[in-house]
Image (cartoon, rainbow, N blue to C red; front, side, top):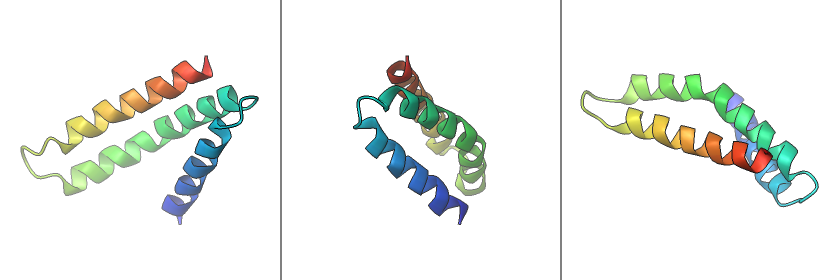
Length: 75
């Protein structure tokens, strides 16, 4: 249920980014959403990652890239 809710928020955010009058607010909201979901992503990686699997580093890297991009749009 929570996954469906956050997925719906992400889709709504993508659609909101296409509306110029809302794009800054939506980008800020998406950045906050991604920051809020980060602990769950780390937890999922820890449960599924095997030793030596670079998935954890990729998750952290791309999460930082996405939050940074959304923050730049919000500014």
